[in-house]
Image 1 (cartoon, rainbow, N blue to C red):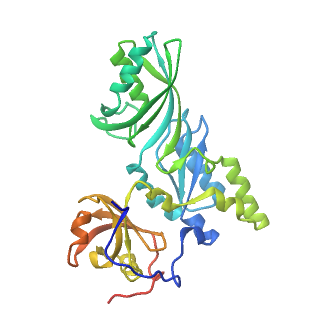
Image 2 (tube, rainbow, N blue to C red):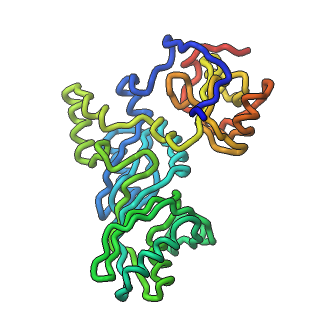
Image 3 (spheres, one colour):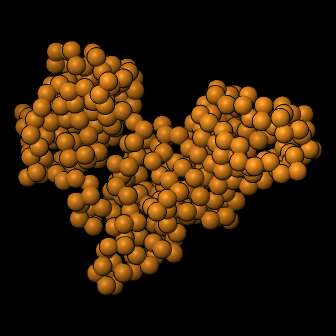
Length: 321
C-alpha cells in the first residue's frame, strides 16, 4: 500500500502560505518548539517558565512532565505551537532506566520478567501524579536490556505509550520478582519525533542564540534550535486539503470531503488527525468521522470535526460564501 490515498491532484500555489522551513524568524518562533535537554533538579514547569523568559514570548508549554531528578528530552512549545502539544500525547516515549533490585536475582529471571512486562500492562498511577489514580492499560512497545550488574542493577531501554509511569513500572517488576525494586535513575531519550540528537539543546545554548539574534541580528543559531510545530505530527494520521479549503477552516468550518487532496491509509473513525496544507503547514487538528475508504468513496460530506486551528484567517484567499 502507498503512504497516501489520493482523491485528486492539484497544483500548489505559492502566492500564499509557505513551507514551515521558509517562515520568517518571527513566525518560526511563534510556531516553534525547542527540544530542551532537561537537567536534574528543576521541575518541568520551572524549565518551561525559564524558557519563556529567555525567549520573551507570551506563552510556553512542555510536552510531557518529567520528575525533577529525571533528565533528557523535554519539548517546550512557544506561543501558537503550544496548541500542537496534544499530538505528543498520541506519540511513543523512550527512556533509559537504571532499576535497582532490593535483592540479587538470577539473570534469567530478570530477562524473563522484562519479557513479561512487554506489551499491554496495567498500571495505577503513583500517589504523586497529575492524573486520577485509577487502573489504566498502557502498552510497552519494546524493552531492550543493556546491562545487569551484580544481579541487582538493571539498565534497560524502554519504548512505551505516552502516560506510562516508569517509576511504577520498576516497582511492579520488583513486586513480581518478590524482591522489591525502585527506579534509581531515568533519562528520556525520545518524546514522539523529538530525539536525543543534534536538535537537543540546553537553556544556556538558547540564551546565547537569542542574544546573537537580538544583539547581532544573526538568526542562524536560533533558527536551528527551534523546530517547526509540524514536528509533532509524525505519529498522527494526516489529511491534506486544497488551498481553497484553508480559509473556511480558519473561520471555523469543519472539513468536507470535497476539500481533500490526499490522506493517510488506515485512518479509522474517531482517530485524531492533523489537517495539513499542500505546503506541509499544520492547519488544524480534529477528529475524523470516517475511515480512509469511506472518505475516498464518499460524496461530499463533513469528515473532520475541527478542534484546533493554527493558521490565521485571511492568510489564504477566501473561496467560500
